[in-house]
Amino acid sequence: MSAEPKHAEPVIVARHLTARFGTNTLFRDVSFTVDRGEVFVILGGSGCGKSTLLKLMIGLVPPAEGDVSILGTDVWSAEGADRLALLKRIGVMWQQGALFGSQTLQENVEMPLAEHTSLSREARAEVARAKLGLVGLSEAANRLPSEVSGGMLKRAGIARALALDPPILFLDEPSAGLDPITSAGLDALIKDLAKSLGSTFVVVTHELASIIEIGDRCIMLDKAEKGMIATGNPRDLRDNATHPTVRAFFRREAA
Figure: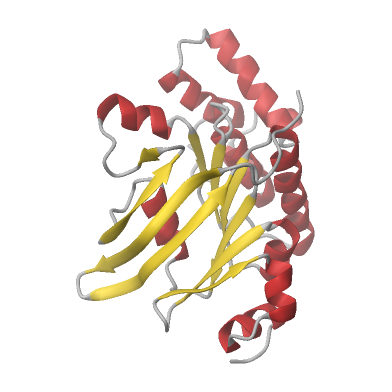
């Protein structure tokens, strides 16, 4: 079965989002859409609110203002069965992998299946092995997180995010802490999964090489301006941006 064409329709709609903690406004009036099948990157310097925006999008941090809908369901008004159904349709990989250290990689990937499906133990194990195979970890299924490299931990985190076959995956700083070769391999994996599965990826990162390599479209947040200062194809922004902060980021120039 072929993957769905990219940019067929918006699967995420964010309207006028503001994040505020006490008197500190992290960002305000941020609006954007994410299209089906694209790799959408949220970028910006440290402290601009990238990870907070991701948490707001998936229902972990409430917005001070604005709203987000995923696959037609409002994230913050959905309750009970509707909210659970929505959460099962997204997968999340956190920056440190967030794997349970006492369980093997396969057992970690099986956890969402045990919690949200009625599959037998044997069937869960088969699905988990298949997901690990997708990310190149077939031979590491029985290893503990402490027995694998940082890059393998990130891949295992992606495998677990894929366990329930969600149409949308959120990745928080997937390349953070990785050497350039391992990071490039992870970028290639993300591109391959987006193409082969037809999945939508929302990726939070400040790694310029990854942004250029994997991003179909991006938004850039800025700490000083407390909001979104650019949107578009990252290569176009690199080559044509006129905003001084955007140009400095993409061209690695001193501000």
